[in-house]
Image 1 (cartoon, rainbow, N blue to C red):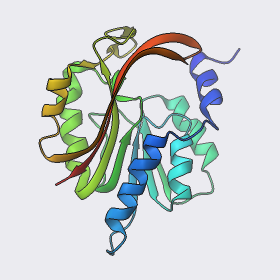
Image 2: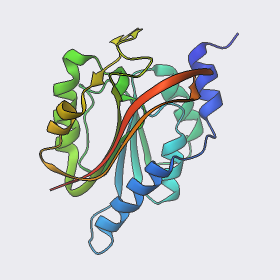
Image 3: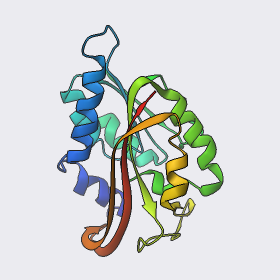
Image 4: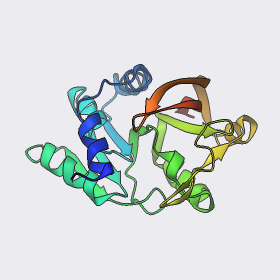
Length: 202
């Protein structure tokens, strides 16, 4: 029987690309359009690689990492013939981030241990080049999975005011709060409270 994680990777393998991911990608492309800077992206918590595939379609060199070895095995098989995809098993706080024009954390920072977030965020923030773009999702306090126990500790949650303080070196381009019942996660319908943030590094 496949593990729950592998079932999740299989389900999301060919999932649709979020409009918010497309928006952040377009902004990062625009920032490098009239320069010689390469298009480099980092996918934090890359899972089965669906967003890596989209970023490659937009001609980014992509670095992806995930703390789950199974996820990286999926991606290694998926991108085995692509020399512009670089993969590592790593956590948010110990990954060796390259300087990038786009750093993305789609529904992954929820699982960063609270005690390690400051170091993880410092590394993420430092890796975004000037005029580069960060896109990420952060769990709010009213999410049904707020402070839920996982194998990495409790899910990481934020109050809006505290979260905004982490973007002092960025200009916020889009801030979307979802606070509603709807959709499913791992096949279970739930209440969502998520902040999706797109920001440009000054």
